[in-house]
Length: 565
Figure 1: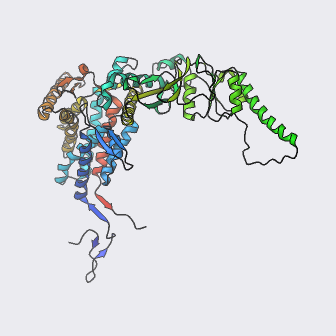
Figure 2 (figure 1 turned 120 degrees about the horizontal axis):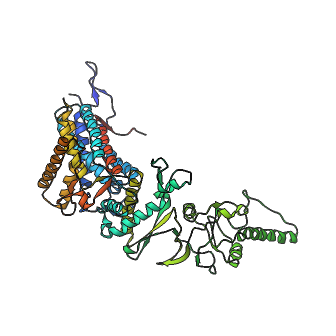
Figure 3 (figure 1 turned 180 degrees about the vertical axis):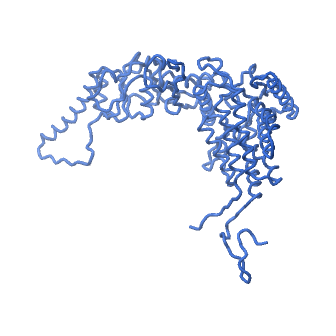
């Protein structure tokens, strides 16, 4: 039989070349099975990093730097993959990371497992679209089961929130300092969260409006919760500053270095003589004119400083430069000045102190001056001076100071903290929880298995296969603890099955919170262990995993080989 690239021409002629000789092409069954194999390979890389007993991966990037992490997204971002399907799997974890920030490992394992479950159907010559239909039905059913399992939560209840964050960072490298990390993540997110409604009504403070509906809260972690990593010290020295800190020193050594309740003025104009927009040449014939010109420059700067001093600020912070002359005037008026602050930092200072950023010195008003800051202080950490604007009243921005032994440790802890903050943010957005420790997945597995028995026709197989695939999470948890996997998973399955049958008899919604304790490998009720995960994260994981599995299954032709340039 002629190869794929060739077609048999008319009799008497040779074969006709259609595709370029160098092109490699896999079609049909072969392509689908190779996709499944690729998905399995990616899932196997990540599998050992799930749960509290997870292993770390050490990756060398092309630049020769090393990354030590067990964050699913981070690992996959660093490895170089040639198989196209494996690449699209890696995109999954990135999407998960951007959307909800947690569950990057689970999403890959689930998607991989869903594809592995499809392999026997493909070998039996079942058409991929049939499998996909079954999968989609199962996805809808799984989301309904999640809704039933969900538990409402009160955002302001510190203990409950701490438990949620714990279950997120419990699986990470920083779990030894969990208490610190948890309180830091909670503090940071609750600091920067604020209602989106523009009105400053009292209802906006509580997050519920008059008729009891939830006002959308806005939590901008990226912009307003800055992480400052300073190597050295102990991890236990890390803290959240109730306000802002940045690595700048005062422009003049004589300026005050500690002020209580300072008045803060933020500028984004330079405090120096203005340079022409375009290049200008001035020809001076008279000596006097030269002096006049210098004088004008001085007067201009003096005038600017006078406009600032008139409002009696204690601290002036500008995004641009401060000339020596202006430093002198400000120092004389006992004003502390900082120059060349980043725009993002300036925005954070504005949020924290209640100041407005002013563009021109002649437009300063009393209302532009920030008075919410309780203490300004210069502190020396390691070799650097840091400016602290601390003890602000209800700041809406904060800085998280991380200390730790080495750069690698700090980077990993920052990644963990980001995950923790994302988790808190998800709960603030949607205050519903699902049990962790494989409990939700097992409940979905049992629910799908039971509902699958009622489904008629050919889709029953794929529908139940999703249930089988769900069990990969509790199974991996048990595997990483080193207990007998078969015994543990079977016991857990029996527990959930009994609960499901009971719920069906009593006509109640099906709720069963039994899962695996990721550290000891015993079966426990998640309510006692206090391992909860945000509803958004779990649901997003299941949706992303199954949808991507469906997409990959529908690929029946992989052509690789580039056009000649």
